[in-house]
Length: 375
Ligand SMILES: Cc1ncc(COP(=O)(O)O)c(C=O)c1O
Image (cartoon, rainbow, N blue to C red):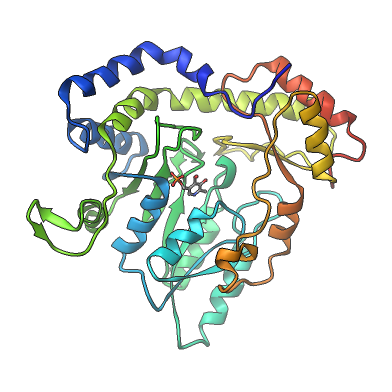
């Protein structure tokens, strides 16, 4: 039995004819960059999220870079973020010339710890050399971060809040969608994401007209009209082909996320009573279950045992960001929970169509690993 981490072919098979029709529409039109498909997708995603604007860009990383840039964040500015995320979150901060300041995570949610953020923000009150400008909150693995507590701290310290919702499209807190709960939400349409394209793609969602129009300008070389370059920008446009694919998939996302939740419930049921299994989210939280991540001892050995049975698993993430060579020069408070997560976290197979018998087999093998699941 081979059990992959993700099987994109299973999703494709369900909607193949709609996708092929959308793609041939673009091919017939021969308009491949921006244009009506991108406009249509932006409007549909904005309606779904309940925001005034969505601007399609070339990737989730660019969504973060352009959102930061549109706020005028750059040299001399500091931006708080989590020590435990994909590198792109911190990379975007460095790309605009600012400095990331890494905070620790909460043990259970693996999301940014409000206590750690407060501690770091407090230290800036006495510093006069650098400006703390913003906070990038990541909704890691599809679980909404504690936006209420983090937004309250941001208000107190006058910080802009950006959401890195790359892994969490469709996740909700008391009915409100993540990515629509801050100054700007940034999404990735990398193929394996909850809403995945057929290549790279991303978007910035915002209620602020000034941010939307600046991101629109920045994505096309800073132009306001074809021949007028208002500022130095980027080439970061969403392709019409990606937009056409995403328009077909968007109406299915809630259903696919429900199927992911059902897979997560099977895992929780089959691993009931075992330590190291994430608890069900509290009432009011709709987890997008981009990943199902358990905590294990002796991770390399567990991975080997799973692999021997044909079961894929993946380490997200093997080091806290401030330990990565690219970011060692930047500030980090002590991040013991991020350190711990980076040695024990293991992502198990997760996708909407994952059959129940595969989940049960993964759990059987995991239960058979001596001393596997931790704490
Ligand atoms: C948390 C997080 N932020 C940002 C990104 C960057 O997205 P992209 O790969 O589309 O640039 C990703 C995805 O890879 C991600 O998982």
